[in-house]
Amino acid sequence: MLPLLVVLCLLWVLGGRTSTACPPLCVCYESSSFVDCHGQHLAHVPHNIPHGTWMLDLKHNNLSSLEEGSFNALWSMKILFLAHNSISRLWPQAFRSLGFLEKMDLSHNLLTQLPRDFSVELSSLRELTAAYNHLSAVGFESLQHLENLEKLELSYNWVAFIEKGAFRGLSRLRYLYLQANRIEFIHNGCFSMLQSLEVLVLSSNNISVIEGEAFTSLHSMNLLALTRNQLIHLKFKTFLNIQTAGTHLQLAGNPWACDCDLQRVFSKILSVRHLHVDDYENITCASPWQLAGLPLVAVDAQLCMAETATVLVITVTVLVTVIAAIVMAERNRKKSQEKSWNESEGPFDSQEK
Image (cartoon, rainbow, N blue to C red):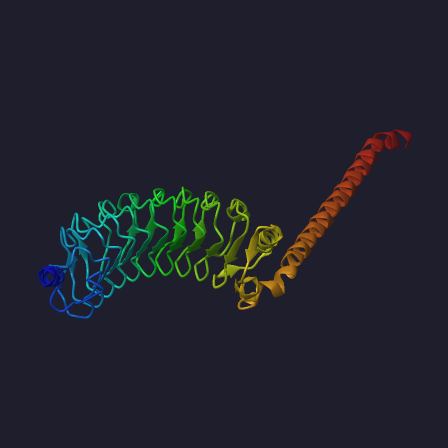
């Protein structure tokens, strides 16, 4: 009886192993919880991926789109790598069954947009990387269901416009990377509702205008990177509205117009206890041409002195002109008075004669 039980147990174990098939060209590890299909020139997501898979690697393949139900019944999936493919389209419900997915990498693809239903099945996602694509805009509808997202990587895309309130559904977002895009303006409301955001990287864009209340709602921000943009001037109000315990600012690599106004703005920023300009010594002037290439820290004390001297010269010139005009007017008045006296004395003189 005992040998029979042993045989039955063996058959059950072996049967369990063989029933979990591994897709061709893929390697399955640890009872198929990790499936490695990277670098196999796959044009489609393989079928027969074990239902217990928690990590799937599809990097460096030839995927051009993700069709509806591409990951059907993969409820246990936690990590999905899709980087370095040619994905240009995500069909509706492409991520169906991935309600427990926590990390997805879509970098180095050809995506021009994230569809409106992109986040519907991804409510557990904590980290999304979509860098090095062709995304041109960021909108609320495609991101609204990512309420557990903590890190969003959208660097090296073509994003030129951020819709107001685009991130308002991401209340737990801590890291937002938008460097190397084509953003020109930061409007009020672009980052509303991001009360947990700690790091905001906007370096290497074309930003020339930042509205006064653009960063008002970012109460947890530790780092704001604005290096290598097209900033010429700043408004002190823009940074004064950052109400945090401490925020580090990175502002070098912009074509700053070094004048007294800019010097005053930086002087005020540096005097605010919770604001720290990490790269102040690396901030250089682009204009006027006499100061081009010089560090702001080396000329800032002279900027307002030069302006003050100019104002004094103008003031003195105006005063001298006014005084001269008063003197001339007084002389003319006296001459006119003397003339009128002479004319009034004329008849009396003729009568005496």
